[in-house]
View 1 (cartoon, rainbow, N blue to C red):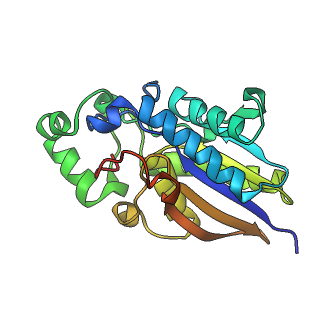
View 2 (cartoon, helix red, strand yellow; view 1 turned 45 degrees about the vertical axis):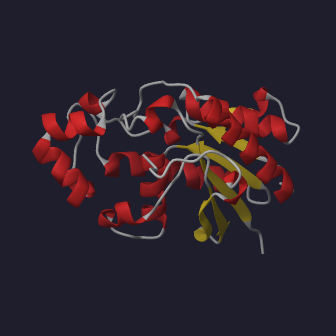
Length: 217
């Protein structure tokens, strides 16, 4: 039986993760903790002994740098990382660059819907979870089918990872807040017979000796 493995990662920490600022498609780089997390991700992947590894990354700097550092840790160069816009972070539109408290004050009704019924939100000037899930789902199926006998590493973002896992597990959008995705985490899925099976979710054992925040923002 042919089976591929997908390692779905969240990028390392940025300054805005710590400050609870909505990032979305704003291009912000990793901070030093984020780079340490990326190196730890690389070491965790090295211990997995990846087979025919393919690295895909969101085009945003925080994801791309995480992928490049991780790939380097297993002896692959930056050129081995392919950019795939399927995994671009969701567009928060006018929320990008604002803190959680600022958004809650300026957009109280939409923010409350985001907290209670996230699948119903279209971000002002941005997109919906469904739109992000559509492109991410297309991307992960394509990636899995192109590397059926190998391991594929995808570096993406919190919202994209969560809604993608919801979609693959056929969970409704209201399950969004029931899945954690901390910076530098690993999710593992097996792909066979056109079906994904979730093996690990939000794995952070490789970060146990490092600085961590309680928030997964």
